[in-house]
Length: 272
Image (spheres, rainbow, N blue to C red):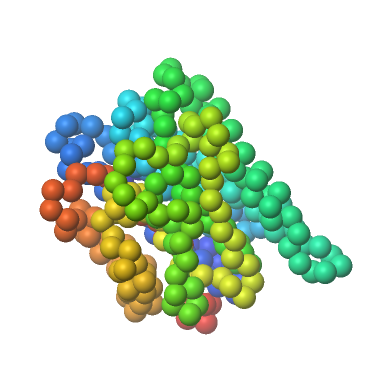
């Protein structure tokens, strides 16, 4: 999905998990007749053992001729592969009733995302580097939330106490250099955070650098809390429309980059 807004919900006890994705092409690309190089995706996680949602955003590198295709591949593959490996990540030691396989499951997910993305791109006519893209992904089955980041952007979770936790290493200075799925050591460049029972976020917010570069780090907490309050008060459809308008009328003077976001959030069943 590229350039659209989507609201998707999945009932997973004890919460109703929902997702919103929005992507807006930047004025610079419109002026130059170029495509939106960002991409967004939301997919259900659904097999015999695990049911939930996965979201992803990706930013195709501006210097790469087919990065719009690369980012579209990236978000689809990331959601699919995280979903496939959720069962492995969630394996429980029957004697201690504790998660014991998280590291192996996350490693397998990282490998699968990179490998499958490269396989898809390998079917295309250009060189692998021409499809270079960042990738951010998050998913939940109701008992656990996994958040991963490769390259620039923002992946952040709003917790029950209304504080937030950032995944990965936020960029502190402007640079055109970032990690991407085409890097030879891309598997090792992923940053992951796992939130299990008792520590489930209220929401996870993913954004490409067209958004994150213009967000004041000191305002992230206020921004996330406002998002969640708006969701609780107005609902997902109203917030979705508001976010589309926000990205379309971006307030930073002279901005030109594509802007994309995805939000994974939970609502208690009793609130439905």
